[in-house]
Every structure is written in structure tokens, then in C-alpha cells.
Image (cartoon, rainbow, N blue to C red; front, top):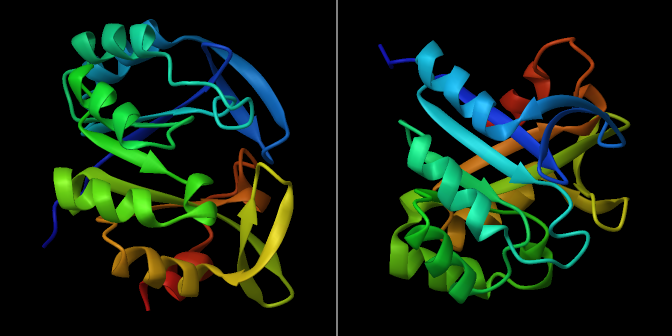
Length: 192
């Protein structure tokens, strides 16, 4: 039997951990340093940190903050937000990040994913896919443009795997923060 892994996701908005609701409302949770400390104590297996404003604002990852949290993180740390070139990935790795999460930048070019996975290995590259349900299908949602693309989640995931991604981080916009559990149909459609 496969060992279950518990992966925590911390969403950063202006340096504060928030709870996202539907990708458009955010409730403050608190300090990222304290959140990391609690997750370490709870025995979490991996931590994902997403800076949700970095890409929208075309800003760099906050390397100072990332270095600070990676030094206190006792498990693998994945980071996403504002990443659009290899220099940023090198810098994040120097700051202690174990895995890189790419989302919006992949719509413009898959070249970064191809290069990064060839340098760092596909096990370090995570593709974040945001999904919205349209009729009876699951399509890719572009949070930066606030549009649903004419692209199925399965089709996009297969393309990303072909270009070197090692893991998929799947998000259901409609269930985000709704406290109604995972969308099993979405997960099944992708895993099938």
C-alpha cells in the first residue's frame, strides 16, 4: 500500500498567510513563520507556499522571506509565484526551496519548464493547474486573466507531463475554500 503524504498549502497575500475562497476572497490567517512552525510540529510531510500576488503584479519572488522560512522548514518546501525565468529558479534553490511550482507562465511558453526539468530534474518541477467546471467538463482557469480557457485539464496536464513536469498540483476554483471536500470527479478525470 502507498504511504499517505500530508501536504500543507500556505497561500501568501502581501506576506500574510490567508485562506482563499473561490480565488477572489481572502481571510487572514497570520504569520508564515508561525504557520511553518505549527506544521513542523504537526508532522506534515511537505509544505507548498504560493505567493498569489507575485505573478499578477509581475513582481519577483520575495527571496528574503523564502530564505527565512526555508531555514525553519523541516520538510521539503515547494514554492510558486512570480517565477518566469531560470535565474529565479536558481535563486530559489539557493534559498532552500526543493520544488518549483509553475502555473501562469506556462501559458506563454513551455520552454522554461523544459529547460528547468532538464537542469534540476522533473521531480523538482510542479505544474499548478486551476480548474473550473464548464457543463460536464473540467477546463483550465487562467487566474491572471480571470478567464476559463478552451482547454481541458486532462489535455493540459498531458502536455505538461510531455514537457517535463514531475507533479501536478490540481486546484478546483469552484470548491476553493468552500469546505465541501475534494472534487473526486475532477481528480478521477485527470488520473484516468
